Image (cartoon, rainbow, N blue to C red):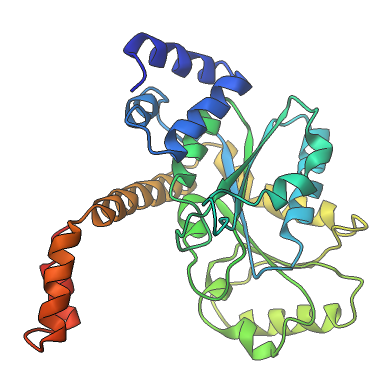
Length: 306
């Protein structure tokens, strides 16, 4: 555990925007250090930075789109933090860092802070420490935080809980168009982006997406974009700004939504941690009872105290 004085100094440095201190703080929460809760308590109330979740199936070009958004917002003078949740290495459990490599062009920009985080088996396209990392970046004074998920499918959409706005990135040729009408991603997006607009079928996909929302209470923007050429990035930024405007004006709704999501994610993480350290001997005993026909898996799971 970090000494109390050292921890206060670290917290103070993070609040001043010190990038080295921020990196160290994120490492503490990602490694579930005993000092992490005390550090987070010194960060103040979250909700100053606007958090944009970028999600969608793998291969749709989310990282390249994030790269374009970084560029666009830096031109406006905003400080941009990026949390890119990568798949975990099956050998080390660490992030594969593919996203950070694609955003390497911003490495020398002191107004940009990019952190790759390993999902470490956490469902929902996020990492267990995602909400804590957001809180640290928020306290460090970033105006905008772009949160890119690992690349998820139609379920596991926790990104919506901790974000103020969610961009769902799709592309032509994903397969059967019926897929896009399923519950999950099509219910959580504030903006839908058909990336790789130069690929055949982009216009048709936009039409199909618009038809899904016709006659429903929701009418989110559906845009075409190309991260490769930059086409449509200005319209995408405009769509995000329309959501961000009431946030900047002090409307509490989006802030409350994100804080509520962080509370849920933090509680869920604590429960998962407890489950991970459940006595192996108790699980073994219950497994023997199930195998012997004395109980069922459902009843055994209920008896496995967390």
